[in-house]
Length: 112
Image (tube, rainbow, N blue to C red; front, side, top):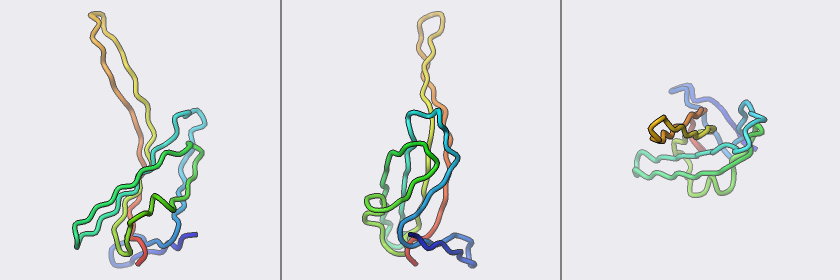
């Protein structure tokens, strides 16, 4: 269970413990979502990036491995990504590859 509270000085929330995420689920998305937790310590210039894959059911709780090696006071960015990759071929046989994606982002400080 997390404790989320605001930082009046700079409007960046602070959180301790597990972090619940909620987004608009896409029941037609059979590929799931990617969850990225990126933590930075501006003093030591240390950066940690942990990644998980989850079903696109609209919720996930960040804990365990996604918080591994993240220290108190680090600045954290959480991203939830969902997308598709497609290919198309023109009349000459040239193959085009493209992608479309959406991302939700939240910044906060951990464990202060």
